[in-house]
Length: 358
Ligand code: MRU
Image (tube, rainbow, N blue to C red):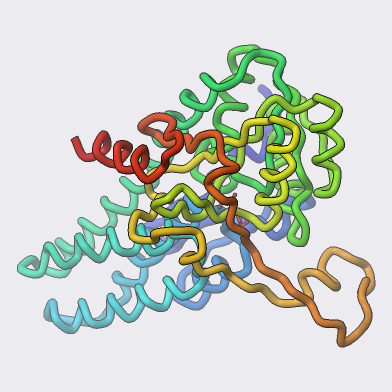
């Protein structure tokens, strides 16, 4: 029997019998695989804020299971009291991270269901909420697979692919978004050569992407963030695949800090940049990238975290935005589960949703 790898664990799961959200604590990877059970609103909020569970789709699934579990704890005999508390808990979870739209997308989907059942009993509402959360998780797996197929059509065997941060299985429920074409290609003998940016300051590329791709037997080379120009100039990269946290209606996309640097360099070396985006990450209510709220994170992530001792002078000013916006003109295509949207994105993204709704 082959050895269990990180890909054999579920990123996010529901343990309904114990009323718990079960996740891999990603802050401990790759050193140790710790599976943790979260029961209270504070535990779930902290896990999202501290990036124990992270990556836009995984955050959405965790929030869906989370709000179901918190709804189960509500003590109410009538719908009004129940719903009032539900909204309070929903808003609390929604405040954990502002940029990834999947968080509010999943919570609003659960809320919509709750409102549509105002005439039903509370046990019936809870049962429906559970089913909806499970459906959100199952859909994520199908969506990532479809993104993988469309993404794979954009590259050829032997290609070099660069990725930034972790838009892998650990950021979703299976396959990942940016890694889905890599995993599907790997299964089909494409022999990709993948470059994973380490992704300062939280090292999602080194700790998570390099780890999961290496565990799967993919040819992956870890590089520091400031090395992407070198590998592209050397002609080693045929395409960039990255994930995203929110796509605006004009095609501007927020993703992990440093993505826009990669995209700018890629433009210089004529390497196409593909943003892998489930439609749950596309926010047609946000007109442009400048309307996206960018999460600011604490200074210690830059000055101390991961180091044995502090690596910056005490008291120095630190700027630590967790995401940046890649302008739509730097993007060759947005790969969704309904196909690849191309410029002009104001039109093509609308068409993607027309396809979804038809
Ligand atoms: O801060 P993180 O680790 O949650 O940031 C994750 C990313 O930026 C991912 O690229 C994005 O969420 C897409 S995950 C499929």
